[in-house]
Length: 341
Image (cartoon, rainbow, N blue to C red):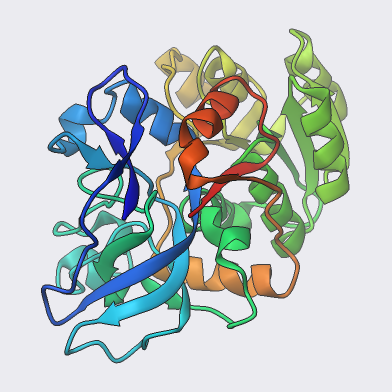
């Protein structure tokens, strides 16, 4: 089969011919990929930023946002069968550790991460686990929802955590209306009555944000912190969801948070430098966020299949993976890039 393989860090992946995966264990599932999301994390993988954390053996197949059709199942699989349309939680889990039993399965101590720790889904087929499969309506096209597998539940997870803070009359600032942010806007609009302000440096992204439910948009042009304060009577936002968190956005995000408010860090790459006095004197909270849970992916798919969350995508054939990665890196993708084998 064809697969997008990383042979060395700081090198572009290439499309290789590799053997198709097969079922090895009773809970294994082989999925025929119908769509694989191209994520900024893939750019960070290529740069070697995940090498220490994941320690993959090169070369390996990247791709951690995957959806498709069940091709083969192990002897103990009961939740899906061959032919089912599925989206895959990005971290197959054990179901037995304390984190799994507490419903925090993204922190499973025995999880793997296809596309980061070993072969992922930018390929014709992917080996995963029954515990990762969320069954979808057969009419759902995998290429339309694939990026919800990681970008989607990362955005949804942050919004869901913030819901108790976003009662009517509150304000939420969302920094970055790109691949994750445009999903976050829709989740906020679907699940809360908060006032939504979106900050981005790209006018096209702000136009999309308005279409998706933002009441106000602000161009990140150096005066955006003051602009947000003007829109919030000088106080700042009750919640800031930072989908960028690098190149200075992380400092602006905290500055746009009101006293006793909460700054949610979802993007990564930068460093937050805040005097501790500023934290205790204003009682502002800094909250980290990683990928969501299996249940959150199932909840998000309910929103997606009811039309309340829609991915804006640009599709590429698998053979053009390098072009998709370059377009993402250059900011030429509005929404999400999807590889379709």
